[in-house]
Length: 245
Image (cartoon, rainbow, N blue to C red; front, side, top):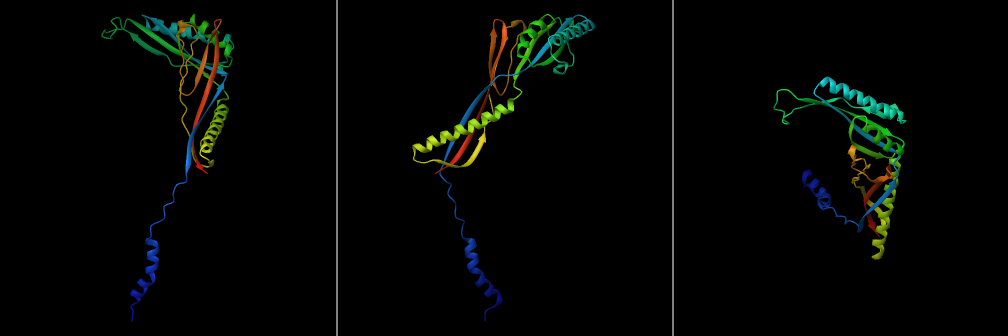
């Protein structure tokens, strides 16, 4: 007479054999991987400008007062040119002691340098040259940052993204077609981080004007002394993998 335990093991043996079998490995379908790039050129409609106002004197109070006077002159100039108050901002005052020997080993500084930044956003592209020319006489020593922007940038980024995907599909169709196939469903798609830089020169060396940006490229210059904004290039690249049919 068989024991209950032996009977149970006999009945479970076929099931254990089934579960012990390794799972079948599904082979990856044939695929084609491509990249697509699109570039959309946009005319900027906003300019961000940072102006550095500086005053230097042996008396800290005098340097501070002179800096305040010059900042007030810059603000008045911007207002007279039609720049709205909401588009103008000022930074905190920065004070730098200047030592006559140049290395700071003296007990007392010989002079004091007082600096303050004025930032503004211009909605009229034609205002850039009048602003840069006018602020030179107000004690502005440099304009280290001039940035061009588009108020509709997101729309142009989406447009470039769609065109990049279309370019990838066209490339995959061409490659697969040469081998007698065609791209099928999408397996993977990813967007590369935008990159690049742009620079612009106003032609006013007295201001030392230059600009930098991390994501876009722009061109511009001067025509008969007037600044031209050029364009902003919005570039997008996508990587796509299609099933090869």
